[in-house]
Image (cartoon, rainbow, N blue to C red; front, side, top):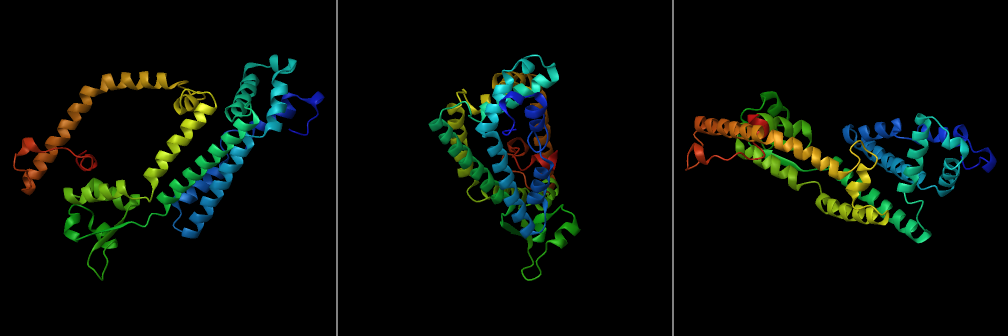
Length: 296
């Protein structure tokens, strides 16, 4: 695109190449890398996929910040041909141009440099967050009796001969069967709490990412990161999202409260059968976050 002479800027020479993979929307290779990053049982393959995902993210970001390409698109967008394009083709011109401008290419040199720094730091934060999830080594041990209700084969496969303990990781194949089937509330609680407190410094990374995106939105003259993100989505704005969600909440609240009470009563009945009711009886039973999957 950059090599196209100024007097030969056309839809086919400037816009069409940017409509096709890997430039526009999803690159299939990115999907493959992400799948291997999170699902492969081979640690070396996961690490290689993580590195590939980081490279793809950097490439995508770099493509959006090519000022020389932006200048060609901007020049074509102001041409007579661009102004007379059918709606379908005109959509891509506007979308690609807006994509470049959302990447800060309409900013001055100093602001552009600051934006690149923020985006680089945000990409690294996201990559570290995902690595923490993929490479978590947390293990929790339980006596077999503490997994009452779980499939015997599930328990047997995770039984450590030396200690006689059942050893679980925080991977979904381990925690979901426990949260859904284990009749022991304390076991479900420990699994849920371990999951919420593990994964390295991810809470700090989330806080850092929020601040980076807040600064990015401000630099690009958006009211918030939510306004920046929703601009190119079906909703169009966070205000429309909140209005939509508010409408759903108004309609669903009574049913949700009824469902919650139904689950609480199921828990109370279950605890009564097990002789585990609290001192206040069935009325004192509370539904906890680690109960919903089991009593649902």
